[in-house]
Length: 82
Image (cartoon, rainbow, N blue to C red; front, top):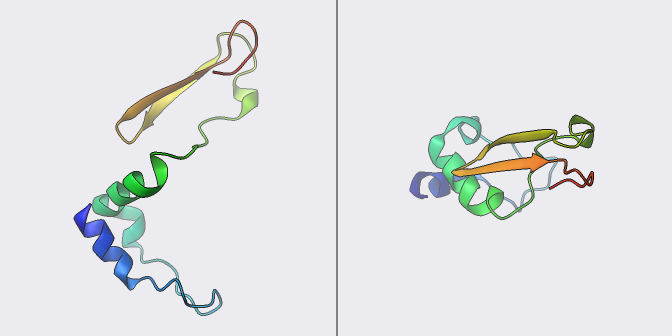
């Protein structure tokens, strides 16, 4: 986690939104910050992976990876999404 945590020290959550600066561009490109986001935000929360209209017919599926975990969503023969 290391470097990502140190990067958050420049952020002051107590500032009113109208005075708050935008996050540093490094927050969007730094691998350490991505690792921090993965450990604190992404791993244990729902993530959008597809629209329902992309999985209209039984057998339609989408797949990918989030961090180190593969995922798949499929429309079953009973038309339920899994």
